[in-house]
Image (cartoon, rainbow, N blue to C red; front, side, top):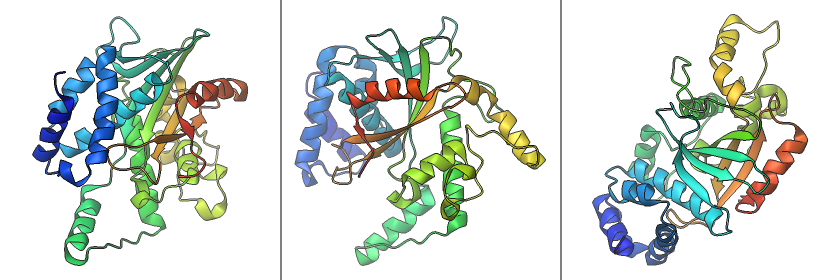
Length: 292
């Protein structure tokens, strides 16, 4: 593309963002985009970015671009918008072919604040130049459930019908990666991720929120509605090898940021030893989520 810096500045203005307020941020993300542009495999991603007319879509593509750059910058090529099968209508965001023959598919999702919360914060900022939003356990539960729904939406419809990830054969690994930086007003921790994946039994009592995990198995005494939820997770549990939770470093800006990760495996599909091998691949490109 001829002038990505100019394109991004025009785009930010269109989205009611002032590019002159954070020139280093703009320069940082443009540097990454130019790197991807030179590779020749991200034409569609860059085209989608420059044509954005929605701030949430813009944020999602920036995360995709940052994710791609993290791998490409350490000589781990990704392939964008790949299909697993010939007859598959929908594509998967990224494919990583590892040196030992593994095919790792990544589908990216950005979990963003609800519009009502965004509105409350914006109103308080305009009035007081600061904001305070307090949540209780019930509201946290709703946000975890919304996170689960967003993760599921990348794999299947609301009716449980599969939309992506149609194979989990030997050597294929399917990962849903989700940016949760804005979850729970930005104070998300690893227990929230464990809750979403494994449910209440896997966290200390003080962190429990009556959550049934995406990878959790019900016990015989569980109520019928939990059994119904379990059935709706069937395709997800049979094809998704893990959830890659992503957070942005606390010192990062809104455009130019570093992604940190926590991989939670589907214990039905991935052994601890295999999870370690997958983690070793991720370690080459991303920083573990130890401290935001």
